[in-house]
Structures are given as structure tokens and as C-alpha cells.
Amino acid sequence: MRLRIAKILLVGFISTLTFFKSYSQEWIGPSIDNYTPANGMLLNPSTIVDQKPWLDVHLVGVGAHATNNFAHLNQSTLLNFAAYGNPAINLKPDNGWAQLNTQILGPTASLSLGKQAVGIHVSVRGAGSISKVPLKYADLLINEGSDEDSTVLTINNTRIKTLVWGEVGLTYGRILYQFDKHLITGGITVNRFFGLQSAALFFDDGEMLIQDDKGTLLDGSGKYAYTTPAFRAGGGWSTSLGFSYKRMLDDVTEYVPHGREIGCFTLPYKWKFSAALVDIGGIRMKRDALYKKFDSEDDANEYLAAVDGGFSTTSLPKDGDRYTAWLPMGVNAQFDYNFENGVFLNGLFTQRLSFPSSYGPDRSNLFAITPRYEKRWLMVALPMSIENYRDPHFGLALRLWILTLGTEHIFPYFIRSDIYTADVYVHLRIRFNRAPGCRTKPIKGIDEFRFGDLFRKKVKDPAACPSW
Image (cartoon, rainbow, N blue to C red; front, side):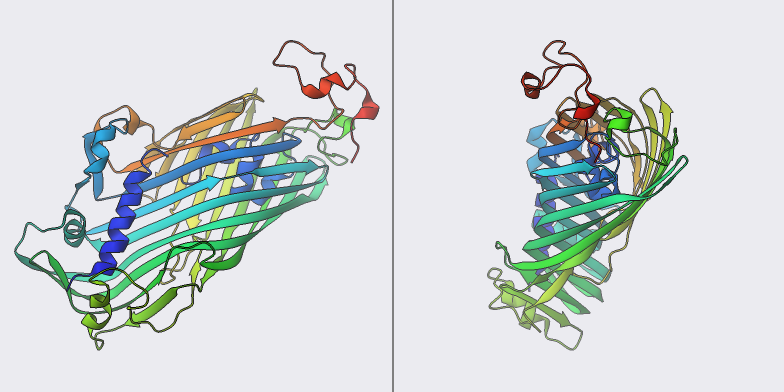
């Protein structure tokens, strides 16, 4: 009996992992950059309050992060495209694990309204995770065979989970407290979800016989869930909550961001601490969906042989046809120190909070230290991160005018090695650093020209700046 449901999930996961070979998990570069708040609000909704640009309009962005401990490109670089079609399998670990996070970020914007701020984002996200998969079985599924005639594997707490969804989110934030050099801001994001795909397979315990190019479940218990890919296969809601504390360089008791009293700009901080709970919610899968629990008393042939000739929700045994796939919930915290003259040092910590037995995927744990240099039209960041407390990475992020690009793991692009982790992200945006009517500089070449200069005064006019 072939465990076709496991093969579909695992091979599909690995195919996705290798397909997104050239795209980031938390997108550290744009997430901590003070001049890209539309990205930062996805990590912490309070980011848009007291944001550097008056209006940040993100046009389009794409990113993906894939890491694991078994499927890899053998002694290659990520620029060697011929190696992608035949990943090697490392069988030295007893159990396999993997993480995948992808996102296409569409039209997104954040707007400063004095002591308040609003934002909106549209995106399509995909996430997947694998934990404690016997690697001999993974090799069988991926390579269609095993080097051994037969073997019995013990499986415990094996988890294979994927989820793809679209979301539209609204963000609101405001200054909560300001006195002397203390500034506290808060924010909330509410997301509406459109489920596109979901699949999960759990083995809580059991034994599996590998023989004659087949995997037979001898004994075990667990559960599975599946939703046929479709637009609006499910729906749901989530929220994210965040706050920020800034130790300012100047007295901010009467401070209004982008107000005319300070020339329509914002005031700098010496250091900042922020924290947020993100992705608190789930998606109710209900169109062509199913779930089932099984144990040692069930006949494995009944529900696993149902997919031997092809995956079909009509032929699979089920306990019900609706279930909830929870999002990859997590908590993150940041500390950002301003050395002034554009030099910053950022610390980022992310801890997953997802339920191990939920049908939704898990997010990666992350700790990163990132020195960066940022100005209005330029940002360079060097994130040094440890994922899941075991995989160190060194990355590079660059923002130049309207383009931001980077990676959390740059060495595989240029140094030949066994590659287990890969990512890249690209974002395109336009920014309006000052509110309409707030220009004070004369036109100095094309870099200083704005279309609105044809219709506004070229001298400083305090009455033209908003007081909100």
C-alpha cells in the first residue's frame, strides 16, 4: 500500500522549496528600515505611527524563504540553474525538518495623519512546515526507491503542513503617550482571509515498513486534512497587535509628526523598543475539504489506499468536511539603537506560538543582529541571523531610491557548497516624504524635481504645512 497522501504533501513541499530557490522569511531589511513603514507594519502595526515618510506606497514585492536539513543542492551555487532539477538527499539525520514561507505583496500603503496613522495591504501568502519525518522514507518518496530491501521505521510526532491564502488588511495606529523625551505608540491590524489551499498529515506514533519501493503503515495513529485548491476555498480573520517605545533626542510633549512646527518632518529617536503579536487567527476551510483522525484500530487500507490511484476528496474517508487551519502565529520584539549620522544597530527576535497539533503551518524562530546605514534614498543592512536556534545566516539588504532587494543568506549565491537554505526579496515603491504643500527646497536638478513643484511655491511658507 503506497502512502500516496504523504507523497503528495512531501514531494509537493520539496518541489515548492526548490522552486522558490531565488526569493525571505521576516524580510529583515525592509522590515526594520525607517523609510519603508508599509513593510514594517506587517511585522509590527505600530511602525506606521511617527513614520519617516508622510506617505509610503508599496507597489509590488515578492519574497520566499526555504530551509531544511535533508534536500539540498550538492556542491553548487544558487546561480547554477542546472542543479535545481535534481536535489540531493542527506540521510545522516534521523528525522527531517523544513520550513517554507512565501509572499507576494501587492498594493500596500501607510499614511501619517499627525498623531495617528492608517495603512492597508494586499498579499498572497504561502507557508509550509515539516518536522520529524523519517529521512529514509523521505528518500523513498522523492527518489522513487530505497537502497535497502526492507526496513521498519518508527515514526513519532511527524508533521507535514501547508497553507496558501490571500489577505486584505487594514492597520490603524496612534500615539498613546508623549512626555519629555518619551514616546509610546500602538497599532492594530485586522486581516480578512481567502483560503486557497490547505493540506496536513500527522503521525502521532506508529511503525512503517519500507519494502519493494513502498511504504506500509503497520500500526499508528494520527490525522489528516485536505482542501482542493480553489479561490475562496475557505475564509477567516486574524489580527496583529503591536506597540513601540521611543527614547527621543528632543522633548516631544507637544510633538505632532509631519506638523509645520518641525518643518513637516519627524523627530529622531536615540533608541527604540517594540513588540507585537502577529497572525492571531485562522481560516475555516469548507469548500471541497475534509479531515479525519485515525488510530491503530482503523484499517489503513480503507483511507490510504483510497488515494492510490490519485488524490480525490470524494474517495477519501472523512470525519467531517470543515476544519480550521490556524495561521503561523508568533511574537516578535525589536531593539533599534541610533548611533546618529544614519548608523543604526537592530536586534530582532521572533518566537513561534502556533499549536503543534493544528492544521496550520509553523513559522520559524529567528534571532538577528543587523547593523545598517540609512538615509532618505539609501539603505544598506547586514543581517546576521540564527533560524530555529541552529542555522546561522549572513545576509545583505539594499534600498536605492524606489527599489529594495536583499537576501538573508548571501553566501550560496557566490560560494559553492551544499545548499540547504535559500531566499531573496524584491520590493518596488514610491514615497512622499513630506505632505502636499510642504516643500521648502528650490528645484536642483531632476533628483529634486517633483511634478507638484509646477503648482506650488518654491519658498518656505509655514501656512502651507499641515498642522493636523
